[in-house]
Amino acid sequence: MTQGKREHIESRRHQHEGEMICEQVVFCSEPGCKGEHVIRQNGKSRPPNVVYNMARRAGWKIDTKKGKHVCPDHQTKRTKPVSTKTTTAKKPSEPTKSDLRAIFRSIDGHYDDSIPGYAEGATDQGIAQTLKCPIQWVQQVREEHFGAAGPDPRIAKLEAQYAELTKRFSDIADRGMKLAAEAEAAQNDLKATASILKSMNGGVA
Ligand SMILES: [Zn+2]
Image (cartoon, rainbow, N blue to C red; front, side):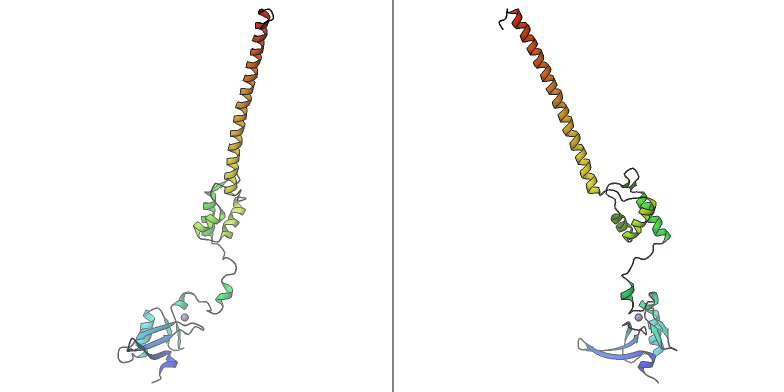
């Protein structure tokens, strides 16, 4: 009976809180993977087929002929574990049609053609965060189907405030001019009355 290595089952033992622990371990054959399936041994070793069936139930792919066993992590992502570092962080992946429709709908709900730009509060960044997608996708859809992002909402707010203050100032100035004109008219009436009074009094006011 061949033992351990060829079948990729290793027996190992170690102390844990004063107790001797015996385990049978299946290792993942993917290069660089540290995946292992550990089965506690109570007394005597289980036969290899029992160990393999237990690993299979835990999601392992077991090929006893090739002696190749693949852990559950490698069932889903069939990537080479070493090369992932260089390929991941590069450029954002391409949006699907459903991504593009969701982005379009979201921009459409916030875009004001009369500005043109986003209505108050909305930004590419905000939409990207809500949809959990790269901001580049949102920029791309907006530029293609809508137009400029429009003024910064903080600037727009200050501009509105400035316009309101300008109007307030000009209203006060208008009222001031009107009062000045009334004062001048009253002064003219006063002068005219004084002049009539002076002539009727024979030149003595
Ligand atoms: Zn693995």
